[in-house]
Amino acid sequence: MSNPTDQYPQLDVIAVGAHPDDVEIACGGTLARLVQQGHQVGIIDLTDGEPTPGSPGPEVRLAEAKQAAAALGVPVRVTLDLPNRRLFDSFEARVLLATEFRKYRPKIVISFGDKTPLASPDHWQAMQITDAAVFYSRLTKWDEHFGGLPVHPIQAQLYFRLAFEPETLGGYPSHFTVDISETLEQKLASVRCYQTQFPPGKEHVFDRIRGAAILSGAACGFAAGETFVSTRPLGSLDLVKTTLPRLQAT
Ligand SMILES: [Zn+2]
Image 1 (cartoon, protein in one colour):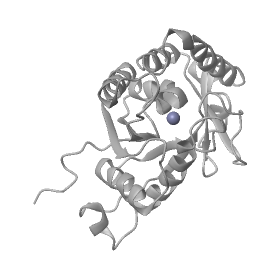
Image 2 (image 1 turned 90 degrees about the horizontal axis):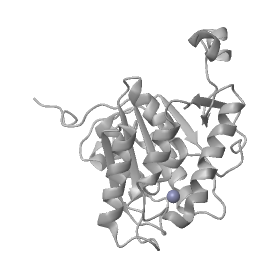
Image 3 (image 1 turned 135 degrees about the horizontal axis):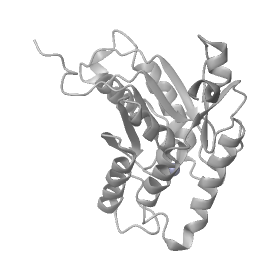
């Protein structure tokens, strides 16, 4: 008998954004690096991000999102049809996202970890929806809500930052920075795929993204980095490798 998840590849990591371009800005360098390292990576956008002022419509934005995923080498990208600008944490939204988790069975989920004042309030809702969906993914005796898909316990949950927030996130102790020296340009290229969002007049956005990556990386001795929060304390099997990653690499 075939398993209902057979048609979906099992992923190591899924990054969740509210809108196409969130994930690229927040952790595109890390996703590209994970792909280079041979991990299976996917992106889920909760909305199609439309309408927005500079875009002619959802088809163009979806085409940009597809191109951006390709620029990172990410093979799986799912766009859910929750509403942009009025995204709210709800039972239906939680179930919709948890259904994708049950299909693709990620080991690690990365998503928003804080409010983003002066940017879209959808981001904060996305955080709450993702927190709940990670939990719903492993709840037994509830498969009927998820199209009969079996439970899937997610082993780790991380929070990302957009490039514009403070360096530390809401009181969590376990910050760490991924070296994206080799994939910073790929990250910027993926963000550039969103021509409707970042036309020539918004070149400063790329300076900010690059600047944030350089600052994050510099604190750890990398040319560029992306900083994350682990929702649980991080373990180490080797104190030297954990605290001096560059030393081990040379
Ligand atoms: Zn966004």
